[in-house]
Length: 233
Ligand SMILES: [Zn+2]
Ligand SMILES: [Zn+2]
Image 1: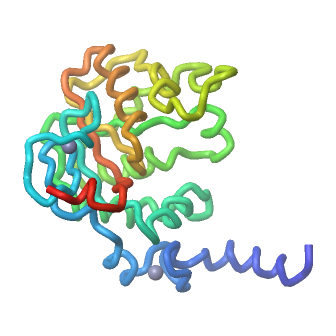
Image 2: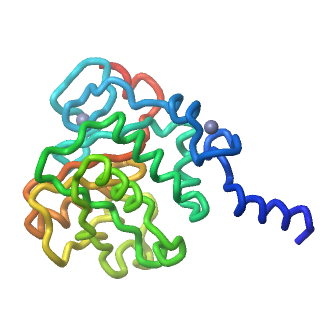
């Protein structure tokens, strides 16, 4: 490794990487970037928070099995980069300002609800050393005064079957979770990004099987498709 790169690596450890969005030296997310993150927009759908132009009780984008879902940010730049940085162990302090953004944009869950982070597959957890959803849940739990439970686990071997097709995401994550111990009656799943909602649906199914009566979800960001289809009320 050239000396210059060694020097850069040492400096990274000493001073951190600065803002995950703009690279400015200092905290993991600078005030300007934190204040300029793309918001989901008006909460058109009462059930899933999808930004339709006109309010409605539910919509085609609702997530199966999730009674109430909210997301703080739209998964548009620089959010993808910030989420990637959150999965980097050197930048795990990012969880605090990101949970702060969630608390700023989302209402706290009702009393009695318990936050349940979406677990990582064991191998991925071992490789990364931490679960970014659990970091968000812990920080949110402290801010909201809401308890956090690790009652959800990945089912052994789930999603690793030979021949499983990448296109069948719903089928792939179906049965991916289990809740072998006690589960809260009112659970609120915590995850970083909602794409199709298939992961949340599978997690909710495992919780309900174990006796949970109501499953909601809060996420840092949501993929909102561009174009009129998702914006026209
Ligand atoms: Zn910045
Ligand atoms: Zn909806």
